[in-house]
Each structure stands twice: as C-alpha cells, then as structure tokens.
Length: 184
Image 1 (cartoon, one colour):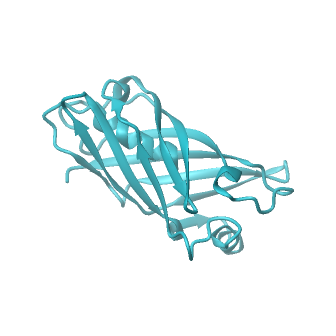
Image 2: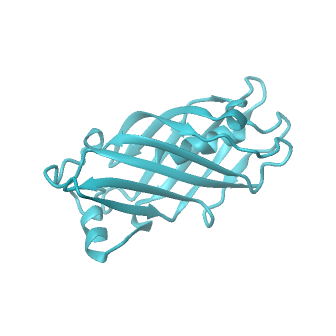
C-alpha cells in the first residue's frame, strides 16, 4: 500500500509549478498485496477504497502525497480469507479502520523518470518508514488529471505487529498500487 501512496506523491511532483493540487480518484485507484502461504501458494488481495491528495510546493519543486485506504474495502478470493485478515491478529479492522501513508517531499522529476519514493506508512496504529519504487510514466506535466501512477515495494508485516500465522504465512508482503489522479 505504501508503494501506491508514494506514487501519488511522485505524480504531483511532475506537475508544473503552476498546477493545482490533485486528488486520488477513489473509484479508479486500487492497492494490491500478495504474501506466500505455506511456501507453495500465494494469497492475494486488493483494497478498493483509496482517497487522498497530492500537494505541490513550487518553491522547493517537490510534492507530497497523503492517502488513506479503508481497511474493510479489502477484496480476496474467499470470504474465509477475508474474515481472517480483518481479524485482530492481522488488520484488526474494528480498532484500525484505515491505513495511512504520508510521503516525504519528493522531487518533481522523479515522476517522469521513476525512482524511489519514501514516506511513512501506518497500519494497525503502527507507523514505519517505507520506500517504494515508482515506475516511469508518460504523463504530460501540463495535464496530470487522468494519469496513472504505479508503485511497488515490500514490507515486513511483523513491523506492523501482524505476527499471526507465522508458520503458514511469510513475513514479507509485496505491495503494489495503481493510482489515478483527478482535478480537485
């Protein structure tokens, strides 16, 4: 999830300094994850409710993204797995209904060229530094509305106090995001 959120920041960074702030399109954006299970198969899921904004600072030629993902918007291949990951040993949706990402200020040129986007990710009330890889994009800097940012990275679920089922699930989790930007 951090990766996707980081992509938001980079996209805004590529905007011209006169561009207005952009919002994350909650309908067309999504975050996905995968984790190895029993060293044989992979468990996957996606979050379908992402919202946030990108803010450009013309004086420093940087952009910052702030994004929230509704934890209960997760979609998985089975209802049993979905209930399992929403339970207290994983996302604990009752006490932690949102995942939050706030990027560090990111240079505007990173958007077109791609590169690393750093920030802080909060899951289950635990905040950790993260870094994601933003894929290069061909979006014009004069019109970013409708552009798609793609990010990818890895986190360790135990860093966020998700320690359940360690014998069955790997600790490393692959995260990916596709973020669509819109006008405010």
